[in-house]
Length: 178
Image (cartoon, rainbow, N blue to C red; front, side, top):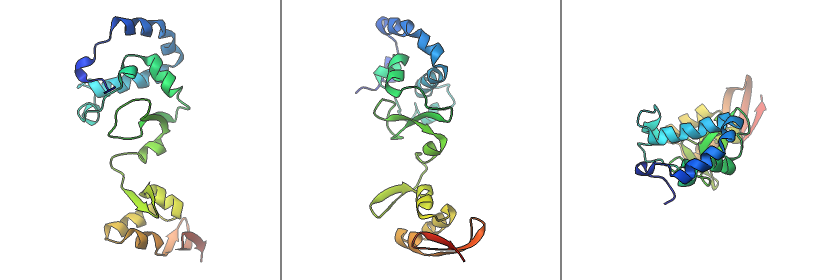
């Protein structure tokens, strides 16, 4: 594959030359450079505090990115804002240009192994996204599902009570003050 195994971490002389010729990029894009270095560390350095969640799980970096910050930057582009960080779209997949994006913390929190993905009306979203979409409190949806309610019943049963600071009722996904 295109992923670099831990045994092939050595950098060739050709790649070293290319990297050094683009060393100005390290200074122009310090945050992206640190992201690139951190990605390499958590995948290949057993002393890294995140190695258990990355390297130990077999998460690797494409050869293209491992050997070249310049190619990483060309593929990813500059970080859109300080609120963005590197995110793997498939959390079990490797670091490569098809599986990575810049994402906000909110986007990343919705893209974790811990999330519970619910399929409803042929759409797959995490509970937090469903709660926002249906204008329902996420803790209530979680409780209903944990009590064994079907997805349809949990999402379609009206809610009564205090929600968003006022007495409200939610019927068919529409919340109204009562």
